[in-house]
Length: 134
Image (cartoon, rainbow, N blue to C red; front, side, top):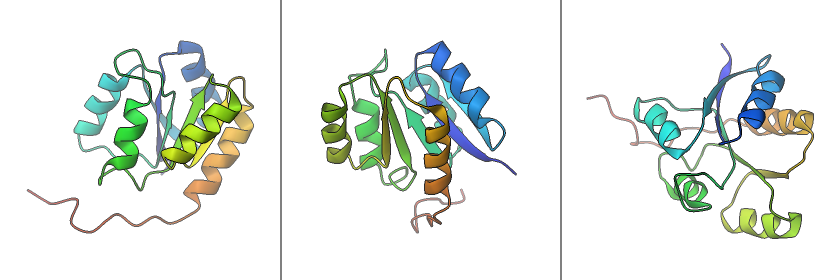
């Protein structure tokens, strides 16, 4: 069974590119904004990794990155940021939020695929007590 990657970006071209490049190894769930992503997550779905553009149309910049990295439920999921910020600024922000990997636009999608495979090769156990059967 393919692992699920949640891609969150308003860019239709970027969603299409990532779907095309990643679909052989992963199942891609594409969300156009934070609301779409949160709706999908609220249905008890948990991705193996999240790829996100931190500048989403329905949130403040970096709000979703901060949410994922500070959440007890999602902070163990590898988070990859793709942004058009200058590389040095992006590096500092990603370090502050403990982002697993980042890419500046334009980027090589094969490098992103390799990065995801590297992070998903690591076994990350779920935190005890977070998921309960109701």
